[in-house]
Amino acid sequence: MIKLVGNKSEFINSDYKKWTLLSITLGLFIFLPITTIVYKTIFNNSVSLKYLLETLLLEYSLNTIYLVLLTSFFSLIFGIFPAWFISMYKFKGRQFYDLVLFLPLAIPTYIMAFTYGDILSYTGPIQSYIRNNFSEIYYLFNKDFLQIEILAIILGLALYPYIYSVSRVSFSLIGSNYLNLSKTLGLSSFKTFIKIILPLSSPAIFSGLFLVIMEVLNEYGAVKYFGVNTYTTGIFRAWFSMNDISSAIILAFILMFIVFLLFFLEKKYHSKYKFNYSSNTKIQNLSETSLLNSILINLTCLIPFFDFLVFTHHFLQPILFSPYLLNIRCVYYCTRSSRYFSSHNNIIFSIVNTCSFVFF
Image 1 (cartoon, rainbow, N blue to C red):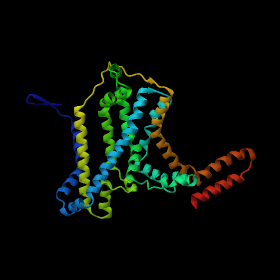
Image 2 (cartoon, helix red, strand yellow; image 1 turned 180 degrees about the vertical axis):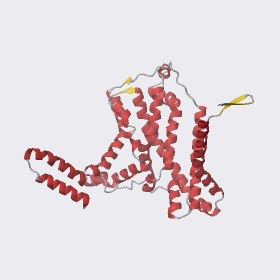
Image 3 (cartoon, helix red, strand yellow; image 1 turned 135 degrees about the vertical axis):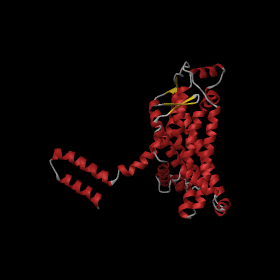
Image 4 (cartoon, rainbow, N blue to C red; image 1 turned 90 degrees about the vertical axis):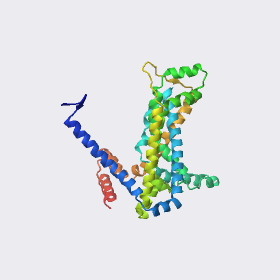
């Protein structure tokens, strides 16, 4: 029904009230831990804060900032250039890359970190092959690869689809008028990309970069495995290892403050730069590429996808070649062979062998 209040009309609906009440309840439930962290930080004792300032806070801050910057750089490299090539050029494998470059989002970052840590380790396939075949140069590769720089590359390979997805959409919406004007002004393809395409797509790119930064700040498993001291590892260490809840709350408050600050800056940036692609702007047609350029484009798109192939092969190899599946395949092939040889002994033997692996 409609209720008139002075010169204004207010719509009162029971369903609307229910949804409003539900929204308020969920909002309070979500903000309860945030409010608790703020309250505990304000009324916290100064001993924990003094201990953090004198010992660990500087290391946590520098490592977190350094990891965020490196991961952001590699994510931008792995996400923007393939998106640009796929959006603007016609080459073989274009539709294939456009699909598979999203796949790393399905892999948890800590699983990828564990996998590459094993691949690059002393007993991994890379060092083992070089040690056995190129012993004279093995000392160059006999390094500890569990470093923050390697971690940043791995995180960039795992998180670049956030930037690739938004860049792909933004580049596809850029009309041909912008590119034609740049050609009229005498700009090369590279200058057009730097001076026109990137500024037009910067709101979308920074949106994807914001998600990447949030993932890096939230990451625990990968940074813990690589032994990098960040805010997240500091929170878990203070809470569980040292049983210092006050220090954990302070670190959580600092991390939460950084997240809110980045969210505010992202919103402020987007409020200043807004672009509208008019409907009468023609979409840029895909450009033909020469053989050399096609090879370079394929290599650029293959680097992020090759990372997914390496991970899939190394991660699934122990499963696909496990004794259980080997014996199951043995049962299958023996079953097929029994049709021709009319022998059941091999089937019985394979079934018993498989059961021995499962139960014993």
